[in-house]
Amino acid sequence: MKHKAPKLKTLSIVVVLLLVLQITSCSSSTNNQPSTAEGFQNIENALKDQFGKDAYYTDITVTYNKSIGNIVGVTVTQNPESLKMGQWNLTQDTWQQNSDITIEVPAGTKASDYMFQLGETISLSKLGALVEQSVQKLKEENNLENPTLSVAGLNFPDNGDISKAKYVINLQPENGGTTFSFYYSLSGDLIKSDY
Image: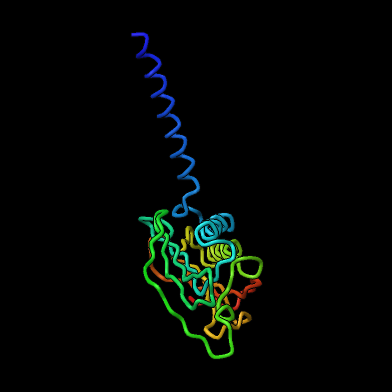
């Protein structure tokens, strides 16, 4: 009988530790990050954890699905000059590669000229802040109570001209319906809204 109490106590400690681990891992889950500057910064951190802080991208989107949360889609490479990229999705904190892509670039140019990196010029925290701004605009100007993110991402031109890159945000009323689209420059200036 003396030995059963310590085993029970050890089991209780293990169960408590597992619960704490589960709670903390769920709080940093990318699928339930809010559509805010902080939430999108956490998604950017997950990208950097997966692909490295020096990865190159041609496409990043964050799509919100009411049933499963955020779905992050990227086309990425760690080595642009290899001309090979991977198309990946992050759904419910699980990375899945959808395809391998081989790219072509005009002679005399570098593949990295047609790609971008996350950092000061292009950041998901900036995109998240613009989502917040767009939501607020719809609440004030259109009396929408709870507009939600449909999709947000970066429209990066095929010719690599970063001055033409823009953040694109699509919002919808909570229960679906009309899509409200917002287009912003990389500096955060509203280019146009479409609804």
